[in-house]
Image 1 (cartoon, rainbow, N blue to C red):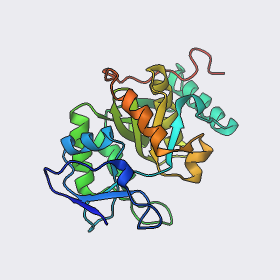
Image 2 (image 1 turned 120 degrees about the horizontal axis):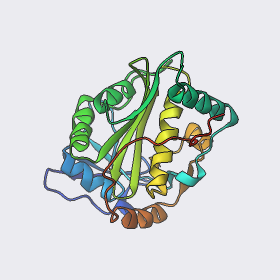
Image 3 (image 1 turned 90 degrees about the horizontal axis):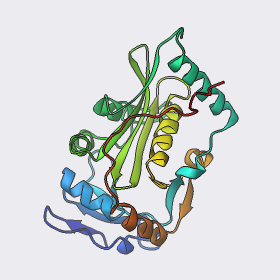
Length: 248
């Protein structure tokens, strides 16, 4: 039976999430709100919201949990060539087009771009209430975006939640080929530099697996989470060069 929350009800133990035998696997609770305070409570316990427009807020704790170890991020040869070309264009003195990588310069715009309908598919689960809640987290310093800009236009990005040395990936978008992967590569580089070992990807997909993500037991994920969120919050979000001075 699903657990219903009001504004004051604490989250139940993630181990009480439904299994395939009794309902949608991973569904833990419904209700409450998307205030920054409630979202932080959820993420600190390995719980995340995911629901469609018109539904009550649904809270999940999946088992297994899809995660990306920052050390295991897979850059395919074709993507590596794209990244090196991007770096040359971004850093070169005579670049034909002006490429930039930024963090947190257009957080809400990244969220709204992620919410747009995908090719040959419907829109995402990112509703106005989701945008409002996560923009509140961003203003509080707990949500961040990695952005790719071309000639002053936002063409790709990714966003997520950061608590201590734990990062929870939420969504990505691209308006140019590989722009979302460029944004993710810079995000992973930054997080690894700052001692973040694990990115929560929530649910298993073939695309995430191609980037190096793997499912782990929820118990193992929660054990890592309890340690990671105790670390000092990352205070300065500035992108780093991917390849140092060598981009050839």
